[in-house]
Image 1: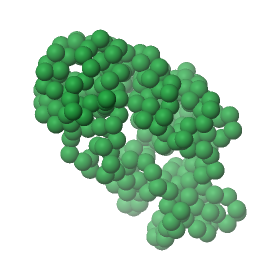
Image 2 (image 1 turned 180 degrees about the horizontal axis):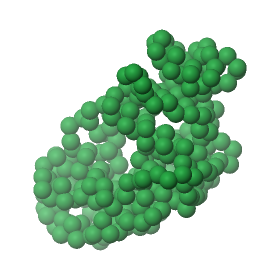
Image 3 (image 1 turned 45 degrees about the horizontal axis):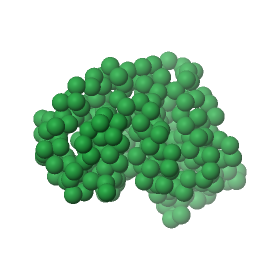
Image 4 (image 1 turned 90 degrees about the vertical axis):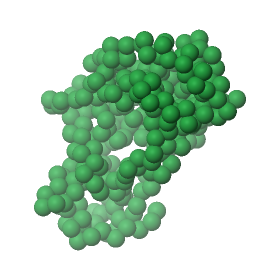
Length: 303
């Protein structure tokens, strides 16, 4: 890992949170936001993972994540060390267990898919150790209104050439008729960002990270979100996990379809739209089969 030179202010803030001197900091690559991710070696021979906000958006997400870790309990969590709110224009800092020695897929090893599904189910049934106001999936337009946005402005989606205008015209009435606000409602805890770079494995444990989207909703949403990318990573069982609750699949496909053709997202990785396009291609194929629609017929559809 690349060595990182902490500024004086960063060092002071992080050492105050950790209660120990930092000997060395190394950059951790990954994630789809611009937050700074570090593994730091401490004078007491510990190593700790730090996430430091780099913008107002990442600061807001880090606050959400810090509250989630403080309120959740379960074997699916990394060790929560602490959170420090920004002061005097300093960015928030989150400190967690260093999981550098865990297995981060891909590749997916035997039984890891089942362990991840079990961890997601355990999260869905978990309680909170303190009151925490959480958003509801059924109120998130990015999931419930994706197909409506495409009906309003189809050009970004059609520019992907996954389907033709004729396919969309024929599929739209059915897709718009599904009441996703009702179908995605529920009181289960939902991670809402399960994918390979947000989970790892230590022994028998599947561990989830990046809880800034923690919400309440239908428990099937998480695996529907994860399944397209897992399929692209060679998981043969991903389709079965992704289609268990068809409305969740409709929502996920609508999310990818309404976002993949947009301009690059500010503050996100440059390959975000390309990843969304790949997942959209998979989700559309599954969606067409489950709803008995014609297969996607664009030149960039799955063969």
